[in-house]
Amino acid sequence: MNENLAYKKKTVYEKASKDTVKAAFEYAEDYKKYLDGGKTEREALKLSVAMAEAHGFREYRIGDKISAGDKLYYNNRGKNLFVFSVGTESINDGIRITAAHIDAPRIDLKQCPLYEDGGMGFFKTHYYGGIRKYQWVATPLALHGVIALQSGKVLEINIGEDESDPLFYINDLLPHLGREQAKLPLAEGIKGEQLNVLLGSIPDGEENSVKMNILSILNEKYGICEEDFLSAELCVVPAAKARDVGFDRSLIGAYGHDDRVCAYPALTALLESTDSAHTLMCILADKEETGSDGPTGMQCDLMLDIIDELAKNLGGNSAAIRANSKCLSADVSAAYDPNFPDVFEKQNTPLLCCGAVFTKFTGSGGKSSTNDANAEYIGWLRSILARDGVVWQAGELGKVDCGGGGTVAKYISKHNIETIDLGVPVISMHAPYEVISKVDLYEAFRAIRAFYKY
Ligand code: MN
Ligand code: MN
Image 1 (cartoon, rainbow, N blue to C red):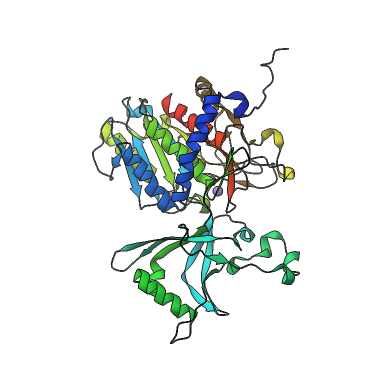
Image 2: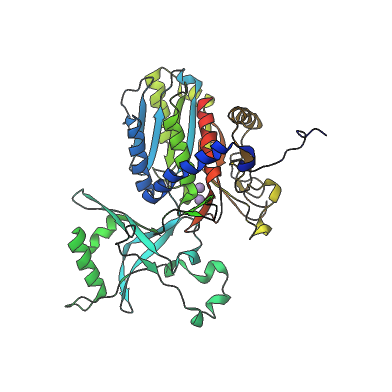
């Protein structure tokens, strides 16, 4: 029997060298720091800019001159980043693009958030992205974001990350009184308007009001008044830090692996790709979790504007550049979970530790609303990944009729750019604390390195 006849999925531990596994564990250490320092798109962007600058990249503004060899980044409103290096080959040969997102599901404050009830002060919230609401109660939370004042000054808020900081909290019902709640479907057990964030309990001396006391504290500390919340973007995120999971420390538990587990390898791969003749681009997008709308989401035309500028400056043609470009839409997939076998079709579901995942199409039943990568493109990817011995697998998000999901792939491929989804399998995706495998993270990095190189 010829052993090569049948395709067999194997783990990175079986297929890759001991050195590669060791390198994966080392790579994971800096990834954990990136997770802890970048819990919102604004914070992840700041970290990413610092990393790019440390590698010699400088800020670009639309209209600036661009030349071969330039290493540039475009900061779109502090939430969406384009990092790109101009190669030596003709710009009409296309751009190697990766696009990951740096926003993650969380709980945003409403614009008039503050109130008190029952002797407690609270913030009213409106959740961001696809959260399972019951997972966000009775767990330590932190407050991150900005308050833009009328003066033009922007205050940065980050409370709950330092050990000495206070935390925030969303109340849950005690089981003793939860008989009726326990009968509700999971999605209705906690409702959106119950996701109110606990802020304090000391009444102000004169007004005898907890709300007034909180406003006094905020005024003293930040110089703000209640009206300033109208122009704020404040997010409630899990306070937990990224930690190794398991006796063998092979896994990482953290908030926001989706999609920093792809953003980080996409960015670091580009920063290390000084050996490439291609023009390279890494896009870190915002608003993926809410549909990629708005000026910082991938449905915005900014990518086209930057390609136009590259064409203008380098003597190329935008349409030709796009026609010859290739893209990895770098986003996560759901790993097979033996706790929930009913929703997975095991043969086509990514398995933990089996490497980077290529998802030919996303969407839901009947392949609706999705990019569907061309076989020829996947054939080319197979060839370059084989050259570098990258361990990868094909994956589809669960059983055909169980649900579905999308990525930014379709917003890039619609511009005539060859695109496929590449990512890392995740356990408990969109939960406040998700789990990924260190070797899968590193194979995603190695896959993107090969993509930028060949
Ligand atoms: Mn994602
Ligand atoms: Mn997501």
